[in-house]
Image 1 (tube, one colour):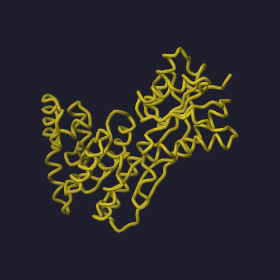
Image 2 (cartoon, rainbow, N blue to C red):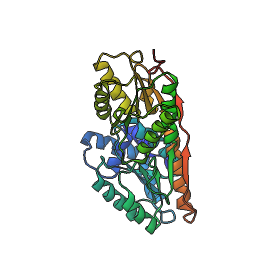
Image 3 (spheres, rainbow, N blue to C red):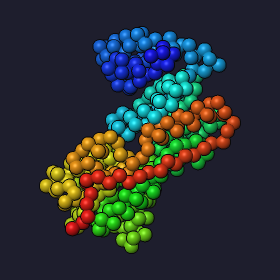
Length: 337
């Protein structure tokens, strides 16, 4: 391996730790066990990674670091996006500085401020929580940034997302084609544009197929498995429960599966379940989960590519890209009998 092409992922593999652990060590972060920190530092030394970073910072006054701000590292959704980001940046001799907000607004603002004070050349924001204030500041400073998977918050800024409304529509239409009419829907966090768009798609499909929307069949979730479980229990407790449930992401769909089994329901004989994202685990659960595929890795790749173009050509107009979603039919859904 060429010492000038070493990336943070190479360091993680060499040390036998996660991408996030290497990032925390590089940023002198807390919550890293001494033994793991030592392994990372040894890997950095063996691969020449530190020297590589120092050499890059001398080019054109740039750090050749990109800040990546994510809500958490608890799901494969983030991991798939990060994979795309890292491959594109490594190809262009950039590295990633990773920060996790753990869903705290104050941390999100704090990290954005820190990352834009000369530490990085640009910023990638994955599902930011309440970015309206600091996005305005970033535009005023002309600091390069791209938002990933968060529609409806920044009409003037660059963004990469997926066709969330179309995905919500396709999932609901598929369940309707299977004969289901009582279709429960579990939203994501409703302060996020992608959650609202998936709900809009669900409602539009019902309307277009002559099925009246029933407010009691919609429950608000939070994109986490316990939230999906709790919402599914509420739906199953209805006097006329749904025969199918559409969860706004795969992780919540796993919670729905857990709730169904707890109630003695067979999937898909007694209830059909569909998710959204198509993270790797969706094909590995039992039964394999029918879902809407978001091109997550490609979203990361395209966002990083867009950001590098903005860094090189700051005068170019902001671009918005929506990548297509796709229905993936597996074994968690079936024709209503």
